[in-house]
Image (cartoon, rainbow, N blue to C red):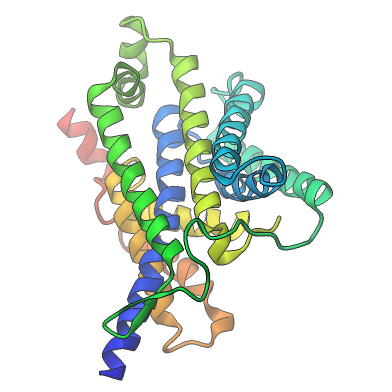
Length: 297
């Protein structure tokens, strides 16, 4: 019985981590699908969401602080597209990646100057760290339920957005065939800006949700970006639902790796998964090879 409860505890921990990685992976997919850019500053959106919410909490209630943080980070995402990517569409993918890595470093250093090195956190949305729920012997923090619930809402809302809204359909058209979308009268620069803003908002939501659990500090963005990217690659880059599955799988494998590896090697799991997938199945578990996609078109 004790073994079963420990296994369930690892599983719950993995699902919680994986949910955050899934949101970061969805952010990668949103921007990549609309612009072809692999945004390695995606993890910084998560960090900024938590940091800005903590600062706003000093002058506003928690719900207002969270909404304000998500809005501010979304605006920042739109500005990054307008200032750094709108006029660089003809540059190579490698050039774009270097720009996003540079932006990640700049945002991280700016966060260090604004918030210093202190670790901060939002309060638990409901309950506290000692009011854990018990399920089959495993402890579940109330904040974990907020994380899982928010991720479920995000995934469902995105599915509805892309399927039924005009903006969502326009973004899908830009991703599928930019030239045809332009001929149909779709404003491609606007759709790309929206994809950056939406991706940044998703990252900020994740940052607010996990802040009471993992704490927030200026260096947390890079590890999240790497693990989110691993989830996106694992699920198949360009496949939103594959990103969810990939992020969850990375989180679960990372959680269970503690049983066989020292805690210091925890981050190695994401790198190992990323390398393995790139070597064995470069298009991901749920993606399609490029040649196959061309034939189907």
